[in-house]
Structure formats: C-alpha cells, structure tokens
Image (cartoon, rainbow, N blue to C red; front, side):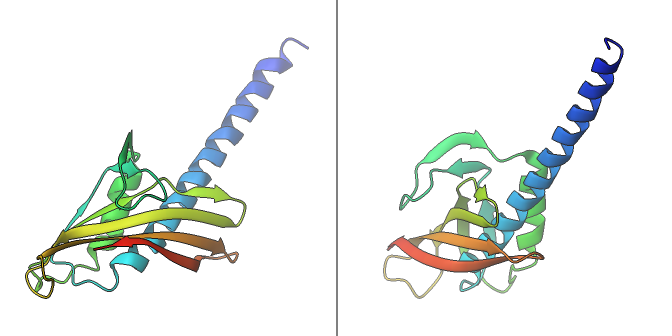
Length: 151
C-alpha cells in the first residue's frame, strides 16, 4: 500500500495542473471579451494595459498590487493589439479586475482612461464598467453591462 501512495499523488498533481491551466484559459477568455467590450467604442492609437489587477466594482478603481500572470498579460495584450487603429493619436489605459468565475458565469470590472486628442472638454476621461458574462459552451458572452462611473 505504501508503494501506491506516491503514484496516487502524482495523478492528483497532474489533475490539479490541468485544472489550473483551464482556469487560466477561462480567465484570459473573459478578460479578452470584457476589455474588447469596453474599448470597442474608442479609436485606440496607443494602448497601455495595466499588469496589476484593479479592485472590482470601483470607479475609478484602486489597484490591488497583485500582478496578472505574465503569460496571460502577454496573451491579453496580443489579443487586443489587433484592435488598435494607428491613425488615432489617443492614448488610453486599460485596468481590469481579476475575473471571478463560478461555473458558467463570470464577473469583471474594466476601466479605460486616458487623453483624447480631440472631442472631450477636458481632453481626458475615464469610464468604468462592471460586466457579467455567460459561457454558452463555446464562448463567453456579455450578458449584463453596468456603468459604474464616467467623466
């Protein structure tokens, strides 16, 4: 019986690694959909993605001090980089909370702020949105969007 115990621990360890990998994939998918949902209405000339998580449901948010995992940060930045319009000179920053995922439902808060070249009275702004997403079996879909603050 003592010889079986290490083998069982190895199997449990590999299952835990697979679960962690799939939860990272789900978190990244939620972040991509949420960030695109908020940034989609802006012409993104220069975009800075904060690597530190924001506190959820605050407008504008304080930062937690907890870093987004490097590989997930890089994948998120690469994913939204496609949305950048090089003809715009607007400089924008995105801050997002850590996604909270429970089964097929996820919540996340996203803030975009920055300086607009033209079109805003003070030439700067922020917008914070809380999102509820639902996983339909193949993708995450925004089900509810609540504006928490805007300037």
